[in-house]
Each structure stands twice: as C-alpha cells, then as structure tokens.
Length: 222
Image (tube, rainbow, N blue to C red; front, side, top):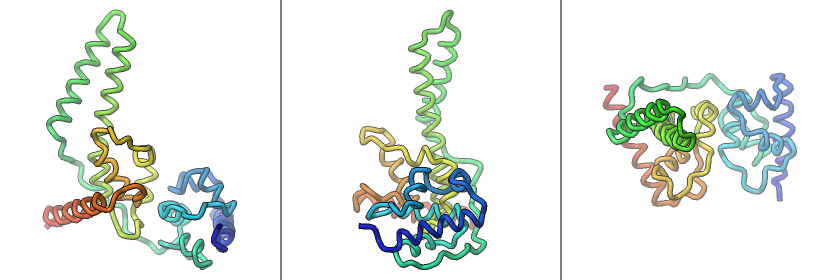
C-alpha cells in the first residue's frame, strides 16, 4: 500500500518542474532519477519501499533542501528550496595505480598494436583485446571514482548526486559475485547509499575503510 503522501510528492514534483520549466529530460540531466523512476514518482507509484537515493536525486535535480523529497513522501511536508551548499571536491589530479593494473594496461596496448599490424586483423582477437582494455580502463577510472566518492561522502548524501549522474553507468550496473573487483564495486555503491544486499559485516568494513580514507586525507592536507 502506498503512503498517503505519495500523491502529495507527485504533485510537488510536477509543480516544481513547472516552476523551473523542466521537462523530464531536464530533471534527468540535472542529476535526477531515471525516466522510469520519474514517471513512477509523478504517478504516485514508487512502491512500498522507495530507495533513499531516489529522494536524494529528486532533491538535487529540483534544487530542494536535503531530505525534502523524503519528508514530502513520508510526512506530507512541503519541500523547501536548497541553501547554497558546499562545492564538490574534485580531489587530486593523481591516484595511486597498482603495478599489476599498470602492467595489464601496458600488455593490452601491446596486444592491440600487434593485432592492428596484422594483414588482415583477426576480428575475434581484436574484439577480445579491446574487451580486456575496456576492463582495465574501467578499473583505472574506478580508482579515481572511489577517491571522489570518499572525499565527498556525507551522511545525508548531499554532495553525491552530481557524481552519480556523471558516472551513473559505473555505479548502477549489477555486480556479479565472480567479478574480480566485486567488493570494490560494492564499496562504491555503498558510498552512494546503495546498501541493499550488502551484509552488515561488509558494511562495517566499508565504514572502517571510509573513516581511514578521511583520516589519511586529513593528514595529507595538514
């Protein structure tokens, strides 16, 4: 059964879109939920347990204060405009790259050049090499993304919707348990509030890791 305020939130979102002259695409581009979720919000059909990240993305895209969408949904409170908040910390221009990853990238580059030098190039070998390179580059980007999420983590998630929007595919795709970077990818999803399916002991390790990252960051800035 829907909370009685689901319809109230739907009306607030539609009204706010009119105020901002936003289409659904504009809301998505501003860091809002997916189109499917937006349609469900405006139809007052979010389901019995909406994800916290949905409310955060609504707040961000519609320039509402932190927690406004959730309070509208659960309590029937009118959303309020957001105050000027802290800027996103883009972090350092450098991240530490494990030697194994650097060697994998170098090996994929060599292999790719060898395949391209063939006459004609073997399509299946080329595809396999490009796939390996894509995986390695994704791991490299993941190092930066983890640093970015750790730097901007706040208990209310207020600084993270922009990151989620920019790296949405990396943060929303399902993670198979046989993925060699399974825990690392789950950690990034935990940082943006995606705690569904993450065991309590693992979440505890993630919190310890986050606290250590903030400690290290403070020491580096001292």
